[in-house]
Image (tube, rainbow, N blue to C red; front, side, top):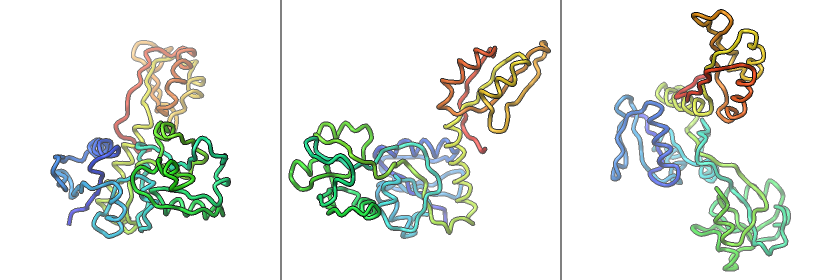
Length: 283
């Protein structure tokens, strides 16, 4: 039987997930009506389901691997565990109160009614903090619960925070930092197909976080350049064909640091600086 990978069929995780799988080399066709499709270049099948159904499908053994939000995986008490953090779909599970409320911290919510679509995670978090609160499970527009006097506070997912602001709410604490994750059953550790998927996805995620930087530089600036961009192990140094006083330097840099290192490289004498994306990287 083919290894089955469950992924979101719609929502904010759907398109980034399809792009991730294709960047990892999986070849498949996605149509609006398809519930599952085979992977042409591997013994794999992709299942298109709701993101919040992925944890249950993993627990029931319907899917072997799955991509969903960490918040949804935490909310389901199944046996699946996180294999890779994928770096997209970032959001926060946040406790918030009406602007006029006196509460300034999570501890101030003791004795309050808290509405949320993540009751298991919320209840466990409050219990861990020894804060007694009544957790009310809601589906849909959790933000309106205080206005309707259903709850005194809410716990909900926040990306930009604009929805909370529009509804007259302000955050008081973050319960969970969430993002898209690849999850699976630990028993897959010996399955070569699962290991291949994990390796390829991890390589794409690692590559997205790095940039390949190339430049020419005077030999006597190499120590300064290595201090700026040490690389994975150390920079690669290549002699230039017609200039014995200069070399080509190749290195891998964190993508988030590129804006900082380029002016510093130029300042120590580097020229012809190129910054290239990395499709896949196995450190």
